[in-house]
Amino acid sequence: MGLFAPDRYFSRVSRIDVDRDLLGRGLRFVLLDIDNTIRRRDNHEVPLDVRVWLDRVRERGAAVCLLSNNCHANVYDLADELGLPIVAKAMKPLPFGYMRATRMCGASVGETVMVGDQICTDVVGAKLVGMKSYLIAPLVEQDLPHMAALRHIERRVVGDRIPEGAPTSVSSQAKE
Ligand SMILES: [Mg+2]
Image (cartoon, rainbow, N blue to C red; front, side):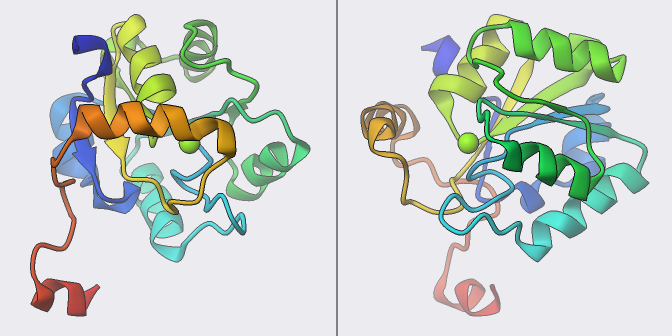
């Protein structure tokens, strides 16, 4: 089960506190999944809170590299737009993309965290290279058909665990 267990589980990427959850834990480098982590899979929109979080990460001196299995041209366009380096066609959970991305950033594995919405790719790959991993609840539930089986496995792993930053009451939902 260790391979499938993320170090933390957040409701959104923007709920990762840059000082407390990254820098305070010695994590200066972030490998960041794209689809359903920072960009909605349905309309390809990057939500405002995600953009603000990315600015904050960089302001605080941490480095971000996109790491995606996606091989469409639009992921390179997104990397350009956000001003971030990218390793696409990464074939997560295989280790090559992780190693390439850490090399590109001049990062060490121990100072790097993989942030993504899928256990079977993002989390497992991070574990295979000995890297920390933060799982994010997917931005939209709608997913590619072939992912249904993987999501089923993920639901079994995550179970009833409530992601950090998720609204816990009606009143906090109202503030969202
Ligand atoms: Mg994803």
